[in-house]
Amino acid sequence: MSGALPFIAAAALLALLLGFLARRGKDMNLEQWTVGGRGFGAIFVFLLLAGEIYTTFTFLGGSGFAYGKGAPAYYILCYGTLAYVLSYFMLPPIWRYAKEHRLYSQSDFFVRKYDSSTLGVLVALVDIVALIPYLVLQFKGLGIIVEIAGYGAISSTVAIWIGAAVVAAYVMMSGVHGSAWTSVAKDIMILGVVVFLGIYLPTHYYGGLEPMFAAIDKAKPGFTVFAAHGQSLWWFSSTVLLTALGFYMWPHTFASIYTAKSAKVIRKNAIFLPLYQLILLFVFFVGFAATLQVPGLSGPDIDLALFKLSAKTFDPWFVGVIGATGVLTALVPGSMILMTAATLIANNLYRAVNPSADDRQVSQLAKLLVPVVALVAVIFTLKGGTTIVALLLMGYSFVTQLFPSLVLSLAPRNFATREGAGAGIVAGVATVAVVSLTGANFHNLSWLPPEIQDLNIGIVALVVNVVVLVVVSLATRGAAAPAHAAAEKI
Amino acid sequence: MRSIRWLAVIPFIALIIGPFFVNKAEPFVLGLPLLLAWIVAWILITSLIMAVIYAADPVNREDEP
Image (cartoon, rainbow over all chains, first blue to last red; front, side, top):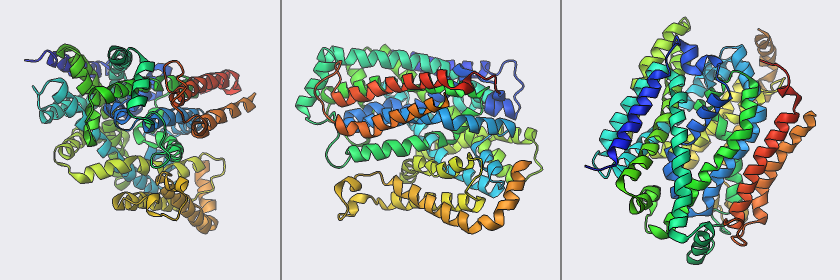
């Protein structure tokens, strides 16, 4: 019997308990369940946003990225920071519009702005295709964490089933309130554990940060800076810019804006969220510490760096504490994704084919869909082969395609027509799919200058998207404009 | 004081273009390789810039919904 399991079990129970308690004193209608009655203050909005961002990917992937690749991991620190700067300007108008029109989802926003339920269906489909693999990633991470931190006492399959059941239960009960409350436990634990590991491990193994980086620089020259080619500075800059634009396009992140009680709450968060990014710095320290201490991990195994080094360093009970933190980093974002996916299906797909459905019916359906979506994700996690991995790589690029038509819709006079927006999104998403599935990148075009070759290929999809949007909007403008303007006034 | 919002351009320049000029491991700054130290410093400054914008921006003084 390992000393680690009680801690991991306690984390799952704590999440369940907090998730259930979050419901108290609230009538769980659609507005409460999915957007918290639009009454969250600065701290709850902070917790939600921070809760979604620090996922198993950050915990395992962030340290693994630093371990396996070095400097390219820095991009994760930068894009979030820039996205928060954008949020100060971009989110308040979105929030205000959502409040005025009582919107529940990202898809609703497009339906209203472009006066087109067809566009809403398209956006909902893009969202769901991006969200399910993201949920699968959380479940996969959860399985890995429990199996390793529990020293194999619980198989990853069992852990995934239990984790999915826990998260589905409290999402059904408490919706976004459950996510916010479990976020409290998660953020306290991740802050404590990651900062401790990030300071302790470099000190323990190297005598401090500077000796650690000096040793890495000696053993692997150039590991902490960008290479001249490949994942170079050009790759870094283009990737930071692209991912910063796509950041708030994730439907669960987008919908969490709706929970704010005022625009000020959102602007205030733009001050504090960049600081919270620095947790990642400590995650990177762990990864860097592991490069010379547990060398030899490669391929997907680099994500195990944090746990391999922890198991080598600490007693099993403390590995259990780290595992418990890891479990919470899977459950909290998992709950947001699950709720958002269920809301999108009920509110934007079901309601589109059945417009007479009222909020109560949609709300009931959304709650019933929670275990269904969780089950689908578990099946993909356990059985999914390469398809799900491919979708995962595309997810971020998919949602980024919503950016141009969203930003244009914030202008007082929207240049884009509904046809233009729809065509742009379809063209962008199709380009992402083709590029990802064929493995195309600029390196295949050897006549290009090396700097251009290193650029993130995602730029192509965004450019195609914008060109199609502009051309189709110009073509359809004359006919559509008056009707559109009239619809806006209502 | 709405023009103070233009300060928000600085983090983009510092984090997207800046690294081209500090892509070095040495000298170490507070134990960090120069490039990482630059990025961390700018995350802190970004938070500060957003605080200044928040304080100066008149929209945050109105009692708005």
